[in-house]
Image 1 (cartoon, rainbow, N blue to C red):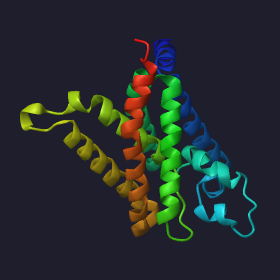
Image 2 (image 1 turned 180 degrees about the vertical axis):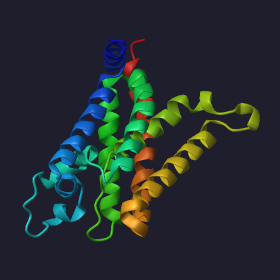
Image 3 (image 1 turned 45 degrees about the vertical axis):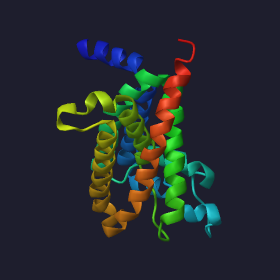
Image 4 (image 1 turned 90 degrees about the vertical axis):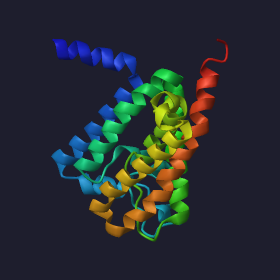
Length: 215
């Protein structure tokens, strides 16, 4: 009973975050139970060559939709767990600040920027998979909106140094997890991860100002 009450409160507090977390978990469980986890990654992840007319294109998800569908598929349990923890911890704070619609706009913008950046830097045959693009934008917005209160001023660290620390830390963590399934190719994910983080910096501020424009 207590768990049910806590769950309802969590859902009301951050419905967009809760819905995305639930969707990612359900997709993971569906792949696990049907043994289609690998197939889901192949069909739903972002493969840039598909936008250029990949030969024999018989995928479940249209190529133009894969920058979004890839948000819901992951390369392994650790990859999924990292996304869920980051989404829950940082996403709830951002959704509270900019609202559910602002949160979703930020999340989708990060996903699209990450996909566009990966399109330009990727080697042939490498997928962009996971929610890293959307989460990167959330972390950028978090650094902009909450960085000043998180930075230890006595150590001379301001909001921008906190932002740099968060960007570098998140990028290294993503690369460490990605290395498990992409080996040294993981380095190509860095540019897309950083780009999504950077777009979150101005967007987070703009969405906050827009939400409270009449305040």
